[in-house]
Image 1 (cartoon, rainbow, N blue to C red):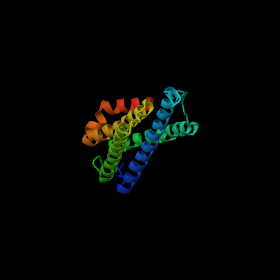
Image 2 (image 1 turned 90 degrees about the vertical axis):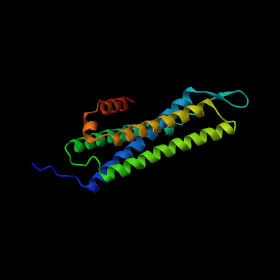
Image 3 (image 1 turned 45 degrees about the vertical axis):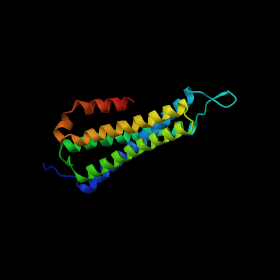
Image 4 (image 1 turned 120 degrees about the vertical axis):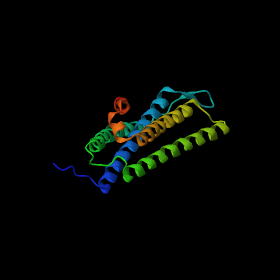
Length: 176
């Protein structure tokens, strides 16, 4: 049986859907983390009264995003790995590289923007525990995405398919 390639448009579509799902998944996780921080970290106002603001809408968006986008992301990721193994898509395809570098750029932009916001708030004298924890959450999520995809770009196909690290990343992210 002939091993038919998917083609550049098909590859582009698959990678684009995968990274779109990744975007919704990470923003959903971020929304859940933000609401957990809002719930468990109490702040005081100028009168010394403790308060906490929790957005039910943000929490519901986070859960919905994780459920829907998470399933799509993991299914498409497994499909991509299957296609790579069967050589239906090229490991070093231009579509894959372009979309991955765009994702890396977005991750770096989010990290830089978060750090600028942190320094700005610090200079403005507004640094609160909630804010710092939220910045750490954003930096962690975008950092994990960056590290994984940067590392993934550097691997050759044989290394990627045989790598236990990919399996560990997959299982840990699925559990989270």
